[in-house]
Image (cartoon, rainbow, N blue to C red; front, side, top):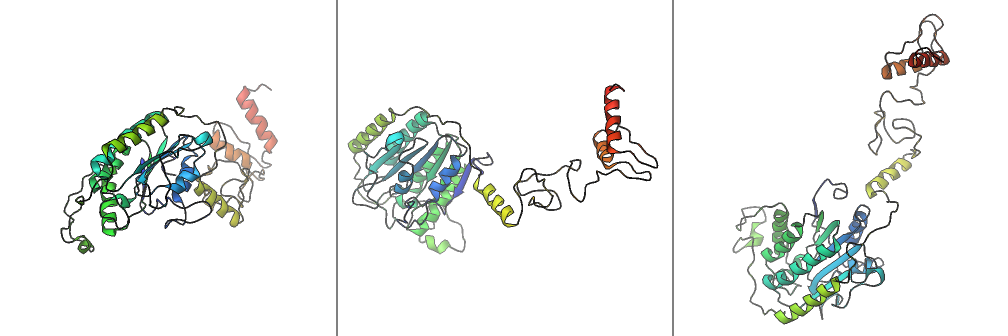
Length: 370
């Protein structure tokens, strides 16, 4: 919601990024696909949303959810082959209205920072030029780092964070999510460093003393050194995959438009409305804030933030519409005196009726002409 209403440029949820869950089943340690739910909220305010996945595993749950639409483009860089979940081939490009809006870059074991950057930047650059998203969701699974227990890539923190920095450089509202990561101390390193990256800060390599510093022994450093492992991604292989993807992107309709339609309310507003109903309140627009059944308190402020002005007309026990006797002016006149103090009110033993005061106001406004 903060991204939708322009209250933040970047929103972070390192506990999110559960990209394997499907509508009908849990999968791969993921019991709910928070990414899909987040994208659905973003689509209420943005015509197009770009999803980028740099987890070592393919983001199959997100791709499946938006496989047939052009309003969401999914781009995944992942290990492909005899590896969970076994999806995300180069030929998987979407279908029907979503054809060419699913982008998959299948990678082999041991890819390093230089090779990863050589395919990530040109693909994302072309996607931004052609698709022009209104918001970006970036899943930053840390299992693509070197030394991960389940991963097989050889990225360092610098290479991983460079992807975040590059996406951030486009100045598009961004939702930053966690994901996989099975060497816990490296997960902490990664996401602390990438929080600093989006803030434009550089963290020192030395980890200062803290309650958990012993997890980072023996060197107590932030950054990781690449492992001595072979990069199975040849320059020719990466070049061919990159060429196919860039060619597919040429078939895109540049910045597909969206027809006018009713926008559902934000989930927080719906929750507030549910609370009003549960408390016996009313969502009737004719029921004013602060009145019985409005869901607001005596202050006159409703759950949706509406506030009633003290000069507002209303019906209720606080109303003073009836004309008073014995020298009391009518309630309407008292209210109108706040809005139009130059209008006189009748005084005296009988008091003025509401009709008499209306006539007086008309004559005042028309210079005595009826």
